[in-house]
Amino acid sequence: MKLMRSKVFYANINNQKFTDDILIKLLEKTKFLDNLENNDIVALKTHLNQQNNINPYYIRELVNALKNANTKPFLTDTIKLHQNGMNKLESAIKNDFNYSTVNCPTVIADGLTGSYEYEVEINEEIFSNVKIAGDIHESDALIVLTNIKANPLIGIGGAIKNLAIECASYSGKKEIYKQAPPFIVKIRCLACRECQERCLENAISIDGFAKIDYDKCIGCNDCIESCPAHTIKLNIMNSEQFIESIAEYATGTICNKKYNKVVYINFLTNITPDYDYAGFDDKPIVDDRGILISYDPVAIDHASYDLVNNQKGNQDSALLSNYDEGEDKFKGIRPNIDTQLQLKKAENLRLGNIDYELIELM
Image (tube, rainbow, N blue to C red; front, side, top):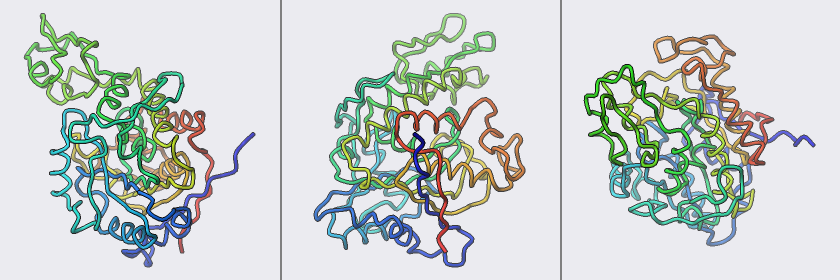
């Protein structure tokens, strides 16, 4: 039986009523605050180490509203591969995600070493259990704040990715990334040892050309950036399995929470061709569009995908094609990646509904 369309509320950034309290107006549309109980611990999950991302003063407005509802909010993120909690906290302070700005504590959800986790049983095709960051798992409610980006393995990096990879503990991230480890085009390898020196897992050896020990490789892809001959490649052949693993992890993040206590906010601003900390700097692929909110991560990502594609692309960005309105901008960057596949996998796992009703805030 086909589900009813999920509601996605949208604030157009070009609307003259687009003000600093816009998130509160969007939140009121969902009645999210009415679903919370006194002293509920509310995690606000965002990316603390991305510059030119979500305005921390928008987050402050959310925090103040949550406090007025007698809940206990905290801002949070998890550590990425080859990082520690101190690195993450320093990035947070540098990007103004601190108490004086957002008016709540900033917490590393999987701890300073990434070892604070809960193993959650999901019994899906790839994973029987997933490893979720401890403080996110223990929170009573969750607000997932995501700045939409293009992504090299899944097409669009949105709420689903944030809910999955970015809410996983350190060991959980390794499980996900191992689904699509990089590969080496041997004939082009210079045997220069740059990748070997870069690899912190000691997974690369040199014997005439570089070789990857896939028992040791954690799929962090750091070696790709280090290769002067560009001979180490993303494993897009395994992208479908990688996407499936993301969808499975996303279900594990929210399986202990009530549906109406998890809400997703997507920012269609500064939509770059890659995630900010990938060392990739380029002009946004399209102009800013606005902010969306929904209880459905699949619907909000699909609406974000459509809103990006329904405008003209910036020809001096990383777009290779598909500049016109209505054309797939994400495929214009990476022709071999099917962005829709992520949405379909997530819907198949009952994470949400691809069909949506877009309701613009007037």
